[in-house]
Length: 568
Image (cartoon, rainbow, N blue to C red; front, side, top):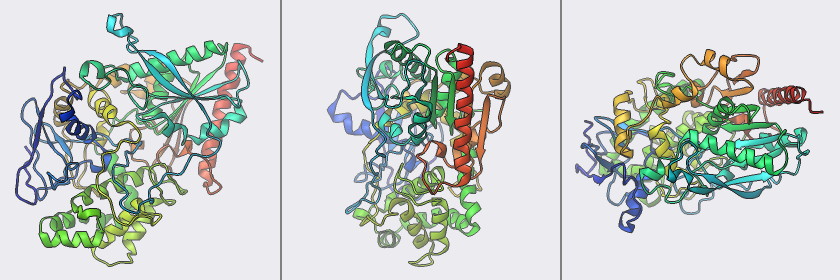
């Protein structure tokens, strides 16, 4: 068992008991704040950094012991963990970032601009069945699933319908940032439809997270069946039974897009699966690969930058362990309210998400970032303006992510907001079936503190969290994973897998074409679903070529479809 102590040499813990019938019980107002903090625990910004100078983590059978940085007045620590039998549990980072770190007084540095003017849609709701797969009375319960529609460019009953398979968050986030669909709809005379994933945003069944009985309907198979039912109903209402459907998605949405084509080929005739780590599960990919790719991103820019980042954690540990060191951190980092315990989490959050969104042009998906932000962080470390000490270099590096526009008066700490409506749902999914083990281990050569991968501990931590045994092999059994080349050759067609190798999730992606119609587009300089972003005048030629290839492939699919269906 990992035993650590906080700077006050106190062992502080908060204990909650859960079982399968009372998971995330929100019925008691007195427990609401604690449960909300539990739901926030997995967030990528405080993924796994915990050292013996800062916190104590423990697990008793059937009892979850939580060390909550999100209760800073009670626990001065930066260890965000749910422990399993002898180790920490980390859930995989997820792109719809919670932006849990507050901007701080005067902030506007992370402000997200409004979507481009062409993003216009009508909001609709579809009465969706809770359970598509059995006839138990409870299965007939319904909920309202939200979806967004733009028919401005639609060419009529035989024209294409482009559907976005909603990921783990509010659907507006994806509608506002999937520029590829908006920019190509006029060319293909396509209708655009963005479908919100069940249990996210406004698409909530009754008592969605009150206990495991209701939360148990949050699965990938139910979500795909939702998409299928909604698409069929939409086409029927439009009398557009012959309209071809192409499904798009990025990240988890890209996984859903690929699986949708595999499981419902009679409903969708093609899929664009961008940055979709369908091979990120146990036994299919290296459990250290996610953080290794991030480390290599920084090392490729500068060996010195890589070395400074590796040494920064011990420097932070040393400073956090003494009053004098904490005072130095307060002065160097200009933390709001002196919340220096948040610094390791802030740093790790920045490094992970800068690597994922290492785009070749300025972006504002997660926060305001310059072009090639990994390069900019290394430049800040290699060419500091406020001192040559390691901590001064790290402070300047963090400013690239949190204060690129210069609008923040101080660095914020962990906040409680969930602006994209995804925390509780992703916690559940990542511990029941979406056990993406490729992001759980940290090797000794990483820029992050090493953490050996232990599959038993991962499963034990997940079981303690949900009260249910995880199903780590279900995705592979249901959709295929082992021997993926032959699986897809035999069972699938018309899928584009895009991966940018700067993106750590690419290590779990399909990186080689499998057939003439299952095509891998791989770009060494690409970031996380960069192909789906709105185009800009500054886009490099390789990115323009990727999008042109995708459009040519989709056009070929449509020509073949219309030929086979004898539609003029």
